Length: 245
Image (cartoon, rainbow, N blue to C red; front, side, top):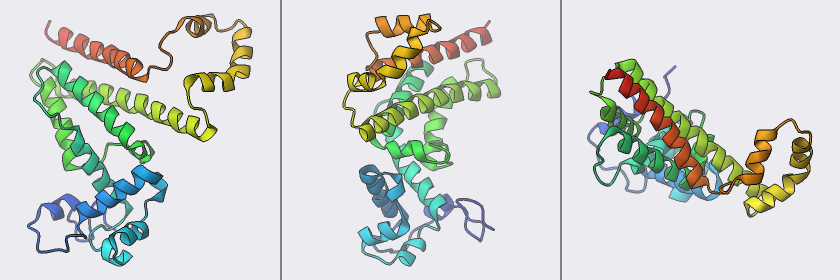
């Protein structure tokens, strides 16, 4: 049985795409199929993406699409590769901290534009050329700072995991609010007030109560993301500082 992103003859999807192309129909290429799939997912959610639906939008038979994309694993990988290409910074960044921060914010922006990314089995971790290029840029910014290879990768993954988790929670909350018909943070808090009032009234959560009563940025997702990111980057800075001692 062929492995994911690999055909029966052992040739990976990316090797096939790197080979010189013949003269395929302009409307039917792996990249075109991925673009149509992304459009469907952006408009209607990931569950609406099927090869039959893609073929219908392209005006071809489903089996014709399968000749270019072997199945869902290749389709997911192509979709991830297409949106990961958006992560490339428009201008060169200087220093590891600014490089990681830039990628973190561009990843958040991309996931908010394409919320279906949070529904993938292994979000944004597919081995694709564009994804690997984004990882390479970030690892290269950490290279030569005294970190060994394992620590360098752990630092990168700490930032990437924070970004993935934070944005996944942000997207999930937005989707749940939409499903419930809540249009704002105030709507959400009013709806959850009975549970919250009881729990805080028990006196078991005094610090959380202080947050509820005093927080001014409860609905500022951008500020929350940036502040959490700074906490993680400060931890990476500590690793680099200790490596130089």
